Length: 567
Image (cartoon, rainbow, N blue to C red; front, top):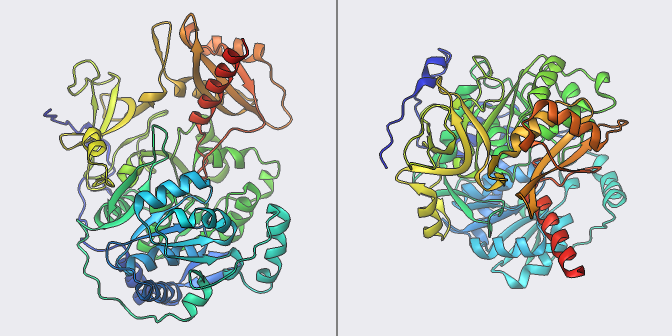
């Protein structure tokens, strides 16, 4: 298919954003070296009261790199990292890269089945993990190729006396008392680093060809796949991010790290951006609304990348008005649709800009976003980033769709992945010529602004009508008593599928099915109105805060199966 893309979005680019950028063919880790050489004493990381300078971060990363090499790590070997947001997560990431390894980011919430699959699929032989998750690692250890496991704890990088108190708090909150038996196979992170040398390693890396990262997808449509991202992919996307945030000042920003580093979104728009920008990462080990509010005020956070559920949680916190959030200049929201109501309320509250971006693991991750300081459209995900092409593939014709015609979003650009690890057939199926097929349904208007209507696989077909959950969720989020909403299609003997709404109400509010039904009928066509409602205290989410629609779908399927068995 030959697609000739018109680029009407260029007409709306602020003059400060070039339509094409110069991408340096460098490794990711070279930016940390540069930051340490230019700003050795500048704070790179703030972590619960402890500061780590760029010199300390660089030297720690080199120490780890040398120790990884001593453990037999060679160029191209995979090093798995299973850590919460901590200084160790940043040191491990860059240390592995300095050693010439490929980082395999591993979600600390993974159960043993998921962990075993990822470790075996990637072929990782070294893992760096948090002490809290070590029992799960230990249970799969002999079912994988892991030769060594390096274990660390959150307390290892806390200042005195917090480092002494934290284990007691941890046991109280989690019920887990950490007791690691170290040996030749299970190593202490602190000991490994203390015995390391802060010397550079000579590893020849081709940024355009060599992988920096194997980032595993969520596994929503089958087994989780390893997305192959090169150094160039990640450098390009971070460079694009810098261009988009042109009012930000290099070396002066304080970027909140509430998004997990093990997710490609947090990795790019927080960790890699901070290093490239010589800025301070204000790191939180997990998202807690009150901690975030306190941290923004105390550390005077200027950039706050997040997910819609994070901004919703802050807006609904009972102590919100006690905190000053006026230091915030820019927020880029991703991982899920940003309700318009949430956007406007958060901007009023902070005085900063909050815009929605769009991307996938396969695009490093950002491909399209709204302008922070330029024309934006309500409900739109914005326009393609510099050097990024986007188009809509018509489902009917297999050709480029007309403006406002719904089809599959496809993109190409320097941030698009090399392919899926050891899955050539999946790689081939995901590309149409040079275009990456996203699996998202959307459209482009006459001015080049893109809109997502839903995941291709999440579309509900009820009574012959195509229904997109996102549209209904937008309406529900505008209800004054609704805090969170998720729409799924459930089997229906008459309509094929019917629409079910899962609702979390705001604290202290009461809401009935009848009230929501009347509300939806005022704002939606009759065939889109939910037929079923379920009220919950919370909805299942990923660590990034993205609502797990597939979990709710699986629960509904299980209910149906149980009903059939009972008959």
